Image (cartoon, rainbow, N blue to C red; front, side, top):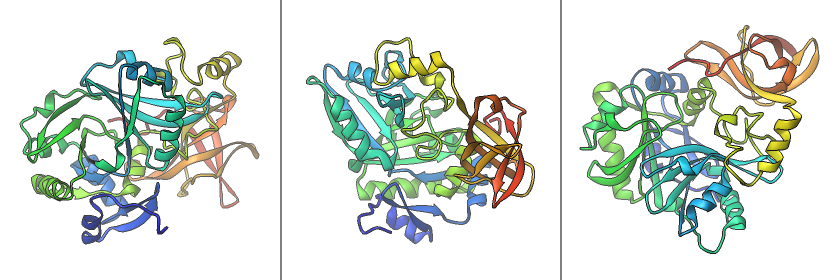
Length: 364
């Protein structure tokens, strides 16, 4: 690992728990504790706790904050009111994706939650577009973030707060105290399960206190810590995009299946002109999901073929613990993107039959 790698406030806990640590997004992060499959199934069946403090948080203050976020992101910020969040993306002028992110309306300001590997890039890009009546702040190092996910997550956390968690709709949040620490309790997550993301100040004593309190509250549900490995298999089963794999500056949100968050009729935003032209010209490729039939697992970068001719490439692939088969996503030429299309994935020089399927791969 690089000597420049950063650590989250929970690093010592991960070490004490025997986690395998890897470098990810510039941070030393736990990839697994007991094993990816066990951790994956714990989240699908009960509850798991994730340290996601490596994510970046930017605050946008000032009279022009709403207009600035509206011009910088593809979703319609005017639909947000205090207590709500939305999934969105930022695009370059040519339509390629700067990053995908969450936008929170926190009443007197907005919070943007971005991917760890893109913190510096995203902040620089936003500063290039900032206007005089906007105050943009990077509070990533001051913010701790835990995700508690799974069908028993609400019952686990309810023991620690007076906030009625069952009344928080999806993509909404409440402010309140949990384990006697003030925080934003958000009904969001990257797993497809019932779950919550907890934002609070990164005080070492509070971080230890909250982690231990959650683990104690979830003991009856056999809560376990979950690393990046299971986080990836969980998100892929739901067809959620990962920046750097499924989306980046060479892909636009329309071909990535993110047209539902791209509000071309909301008015001007960065990249809108290019996206309108891409829509007018017709998409030449699309991001699709597929399953493989043999005991082979697709990996990032593998070729996708039809009748021996390359038609695309795998962006994400894994073994699905829920389906017990190989699944993946990848960009293919538009004529091969229909559900039911039969293609093949080139696995170690062998073509393995695959079928394009509707995503998410599993229904929750």
